[in-house]
Each structure stands twice: as C-alpha cells, then as structure tokens.
Length: 101
Image (cartoon, rainbow, N blue to C red):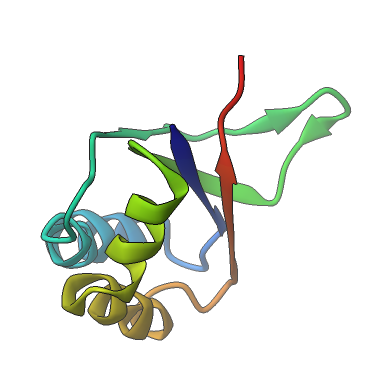
C-alpha cells in the first residue's frame, strides 16, 4: 500500500480555507483513479513539543506506489496540483511513501 500525506499550513482565514478546500479542491482530486481511502484531520494539530504550524492533514491511501503515481499523473491529479495556489497560500507539504508493517 502507498500513502499520500498532504499537510497544509495554518491559513490566514481558516473558514475560507475549509470552505474552498472541501467544496472545491477535494471534489477535484476525488476524481483521481485508484484512491482507496481518504482521512482528514481536524484542527488543532499539535506536536510533542506543542502547537504546530500545520492546520489540516489529508491522508490518501492507494494500493501501490504505482497507483499513487498514476493518480497524480491523471487529469484529476494534475488539476488538483494546479489548484493548490488557489487556497494554500500559507504553504503545503506533500509526502508520498510506501507503507510497511
């Protein structure tokens, strides 16, 4: 299995961020092929040292790294990447990795 971990930094306007994210951005990426599951965090996000600059985390699971890469290369995946500047001005970190037990 493979995971796409998307960490969005704290936005200037959290309400506007969430409205755009869930009403516009998520439906764009939801059309990408091969998504098995998606889990979203809820603020606040903390670290063992205290508060984090990360506001929201999305965990997207795929069957394999190849499936994840195909999703990102798809029309929906490319549209989702192109949409990031429309709402993630505070910054975003995207990690892709294979999951091991």
